[in-house]
Amino acid sequence: MTSLIANPGRRAGLLYLFIVLTAPVHLLYIPGRLFVRGDAAATMANVLANETLFRGGIALELVGAAVWAGLLLALYWLFRGVDKRLSVLMVMLGAIPMLAASVLSASVESTALMVARGADFLGVFDIAERGALFMLLMRVGGYATSSVELFWGLWLLPLGMLVLRSRQIPRLLGFWLLLNGLAYALDSLLSVLVAGPLPALDMILPVLQFGEVAFMLWLLAKGMQPALASTPATAGAAVAIP
Image (cartoon, rainbow, N blue to C red):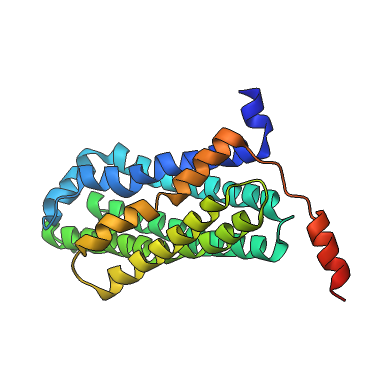
């Protein structure tokens, strides 16, 4: 266990593992457990009956945002010696939109819970109207998640390039991360442009999107030390370029 924590790459892998394990809970499990398609009243009743679970999902999303920030910093320290500009771009694409979306989503869900509980100033709305308002707020949170999926993809592009340029990680993982990023971006855009599901893409995209998991597992298994800022190759390039 000590060797696992002592290695910087494995520490990043542990942070990544937390994200991989907890994100499906608040993105898929809790909505699947509580939401009833096309029935706002039943959904709101489920949320009120399982308020602790609903609040736990909000808390988990906020904790995940904090862990995500730590993961980005850990990856930056690992790869800044490979290419500092790409490392900064990776952090910017990964941090700003995704942390903002997490805060927005948590705020909207907290507001939706307040609507479901029926605060005093909401007395002008009857139960059906509160149900409709509750579902509207939950849809807004869902759209925020769908929109930020584009940036789930974009931040993987500089990460994939950094992996390709690093000499510590198999290049296959770099190409896989690039494809993973493009798959997320395509999925996000299609959710806006196309109303229904696309069966062919629904089969291909999950395979491409497994690249992040493969990268995370490699970090946990092999670990990684921060790349040096001046390797022989980069030193020679620095001399050759005035």
